[in-house]
Structure formats: C-alpha cells, structure tokens
Image (cartoon, rainbow, N blue to C red; front, side, top):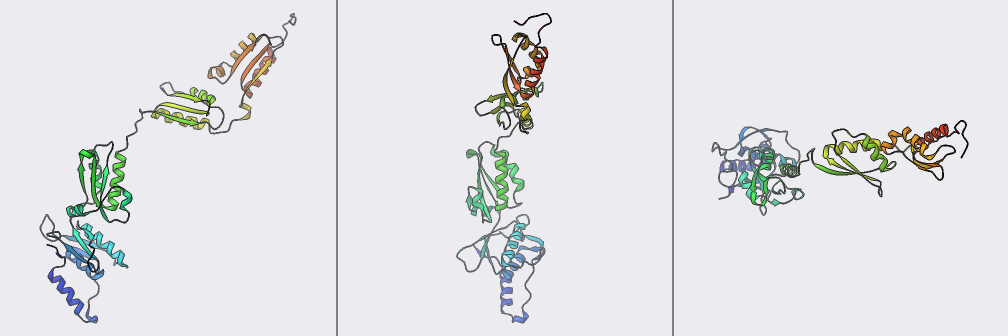
Length: 346
C-alpha cells in the first residue's frame, strides 16, 4: 500500500512548526547530513522546497541491513527552487533511490523507487535524442555487429552504482539500459564504438587522390621511385579526372597518401612543365641522336618522365619531357651534331 513517506512523528513535527507563532518558527534546515537517515533528507525537502513523497514497501530501507538508508552530504544552501530540487535528486541518488514526479496530485509530489522499480517504471526510448529533458529513462540499444555479451561488461562500469541496470536480449541482439539520462548517453557511445568494425593495418583498402598540381601520371612515376622494397601497394591513374587510385594494406596506403600530399604540395614550376618538341638534325642521324639522348637521360626514361623518338626521313628527334630537360637535350645535340672531319654533307 502506498503511504506518505513522512512517518507520523515527522508529520506531527511539521504540523507543530506550521502552527507555532511566526517568531517562534525555527530556521529553514540546511542540506547538511552526516550519516543521517534518508528521512532527514525528505524532511529537508519538504521544508525547503515544499514537495511531498510517496513510496511502497521497504523502499527507504537498506536491503543489506534492513534499516533506514543513511547518507552523508554537505552542501551550501541552494538559492533557487530548481537548484534545491536538483540537489535533492543528487542526494537521493547517493541513497540509491530515484524520484519520479507523480501527476494529478496537489503540489509537487515524487514517487521514490529503488533500482528495480525505477527500471520497471522508466519511459523506454529508442534514440539518444529522445532523452533530452528526461531525468531517468530506459534506452534500447540494438547491436548489428558486436556480440551483446561482449558489450555489457564495457557499459556496466559506467552506470550509476546501485541504480543503473542492463537487460540483455540475445535473440534480438539488443539491450535495455536503465539509468539517469547522462549515463545513458555514455552507454550509447560505448555501444556504438563497440559495434563499429575494428580497423586493422592489414585490411585491404582503396583510396583516391585528386592531383592539384601537374599530371597524375607524372606523380605516379615519382611515387614509384619512393617505393620501399617490402611494400606491395598498387597505383592506377585515371587520366580523365587526373586522379590516382592507390590500393593495398591500410598502413601502406596511408604512407603512400602522405607521400602524395608532400609531392603535390607545391604548384608546378614552369621550368619543369611537361612539353613535347622536335629537334632538327643537320649531320647526325636520328638513330645516333636517339641513342645518345637515351644514354644521357637513362634515369629519366626509366622513371617515365622523358621519352625520345627519331624520324629518319625528316632527320628529327622527338623529345618529350620537362622544359628543363628539353634544353639539356638541345645543348647535347648541338654539341655533337657537327660534320665529321673530311666528311661531306649528304
């Protein structure tokens, strides 16, 4: 049977205070409790805030001792009614009690529950957004990847001691966590983190990189020169979008993308802009000129940054590379394209 939380003696004391002359009334109590029974907290709340309480059975008793729950707390007297109400909830929380406001009764009245009762009577919500403005609730958490029993031990230490509880439903891979709203938000974050697939260094991934300065093909060539002996990543150029796709182990791809960002961090220098031009020969044959240039630019040709071709009929060399390398090629041809001593021009 429900009953007013205040025992008869306390109720009589309150009546005596209300009936005493104004000058004889005692000062308002302060929220200072030293190993005090929970009824002292309720008496303070009745006098300081004007609220009432209802409870059932042995709610006020400590299940371990069978005696009234006791609490030690010392606080500065709150200034406003709202602050006093929040303090009341906090002290009741230390007593492992939860207060739900009861509607339809004169004046603010709170029904006191232990953890089990609070969990049974709490409003059940499905998302953290629904917790806004709520004091105590039950949050449904559905897991998609993580095992329910593996998540429960991570959440339990974060719940309010003596109050928070978890109900497990293995068939539907879900939990119902009952606690104060701030603790439920923590439980939700832990569950979401556990439900995400863990990232491993040896996971195979594909990442794209949009080149800002220059051609993706040239950047891919430069990237190859930085490849470590034990790396197995692959890079593919999408010429249509000047994009690089890098695939491989997660840790390797991460290192490759960092190299790409460094290589692509500065605008292209005009002196090294890619160009294709012909070099006209006078005495030297295209085959000899191409052989000489390929020897001179052996490293660049191997890296793909320089290409050389010859046209016998027109006595020309086609050179593809940077402006800087083109000038070097022209200087080399000029130095060797001379009439051999005693020879005549063909």
